[in-house]
Image (cartoon, rainbow, N blue to C red; front, side):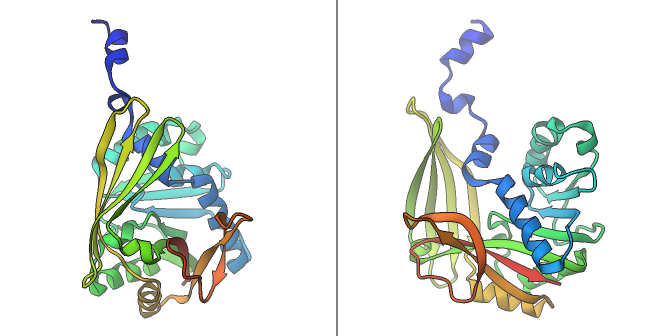
Length: 272
């Protein structure tokens, strides 16, 4: 059988790339970079030029950052050899040569890595929730503070709402596939949670447990208190606004109370 014929006989799941599916489902790096830059400028009165992306995965955000111009550089840090290699080939490698030179990927533990002082450090997609004790989370936040310039800013995200405590599945249709967020296990006493990402395709094929996470689900007050204990100033929650249909409009602004939504995602922005 020819390679072309063999490909025709493969299911859509067998032909799919889980990293590309993840980016299409979970990330919007253009919006993230815009939010980071606009928020930093509003806080500091200048543009940020050097970004560090912790738990960077495919380094899509780090690559998007340097597209702003020749004065912009980024550092991506992750422990996963395979996903970093995918990012080097499929994200960094697709940039113009002059942009590639301004992206540095480091395979290391974010608790121990040493990098030059940065303007912005980000930990997105709830990845830092892998730290499940106050002691380790505080250690991480202190290392983040040390990695920032004197006027640097730390950005992370979190989610919550009553639905976050349920063992449930949520399906979202995308072009060519369905993304399934599966909250498989939750322990109210410890806030341990185990989640999966599955993908389903129009031909009926599936990728089950494409990604699995075991986290502690931290609350906003806990994270804010830990950031203050680590020495940060003004840890502020940025809450998403609503459109005319009551859905999220992608615009995040400072908020002291929030709303008792069934499910919400927000940013926390902390100043050094």
